[in-house]
Amino acid sequence: MAWVTKSSQETYVNNETPREYTKTEKAGNWWHYHKWQVVAVIVALVLVASFIKETVFSTKPDYQVAFVGIQDLPDDTVSALTEALQSFGEDLNGDGQVSVLVNQYVLDMDKLSDTTEVDPYMQMAGLTRLSADISSRDGSFIYLLEDPALFESYTEALSYLDGTIPADTDDSASLDWTRMVYRWTDCPVLTGLDLGSYTGYTSVDEAQGSNQDVLKNLYLGFRGDWSGEENPARDGAWQLWQKLTAGAESTASES
Image (tube, rainbow, N blue to C red; front, side, top):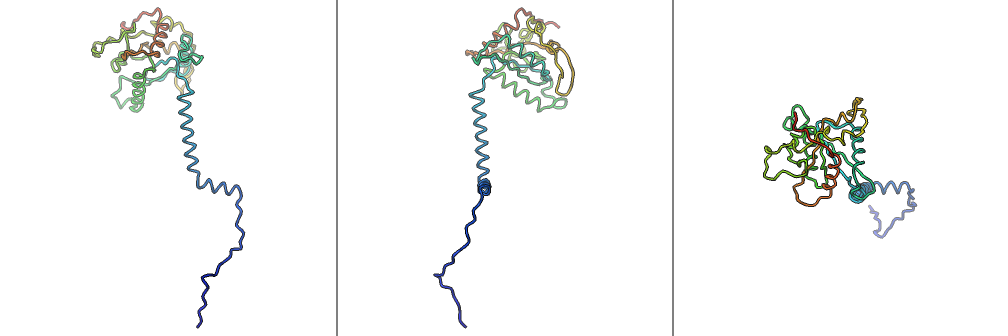
């Protein structure tokens, strides 16, 4: 029986013409193998752009005012208050306009340890943001407070009405919060503001009322600065404070 073998020198020729892919097919193939690299680059560019916007192109407000209470102020009240305060301010950062930012901290200080009647996560979020603001050199210095006694008891952050600060050796029991705040109604400048009215105390109701009525039960305090360093943000806020409290006499100690 004869065996037939192929020579190792034998070659084969492929006579088929290579397929020409369309531009769409080439693009689809490239995208299949590189899409995640593209996504990563886009995400990186977005993060860089956001960082540049926040650090280079954004400007900080000239003044920051904090509200601390168990419920957010109505949006209309915040807008009216912001516009009114801007009329008393100056362009501290040189951007050609006067801007006021109202920071709201929703916090029930009477129930910080109560996890049954209040949302502990909301409490923690409010307390964390408030603590960061109090420790910031350029944060809020003028405070609108629902409960100044509890605020000062927990934070020991307020100065006296004349701008002096309690001594470091004073304990919380010796701090007299009534010497640190005005009632809103103690301040002729504030009660004389034409703030209009609000519609919708919260985002889910249609209640209506006067913005002055919303604010009339609040107290006004100024955050102390124990650093001993120069601070333009504090100095600018103090000038605004003096304008807002001109002619005021505190009745905080009265029942």
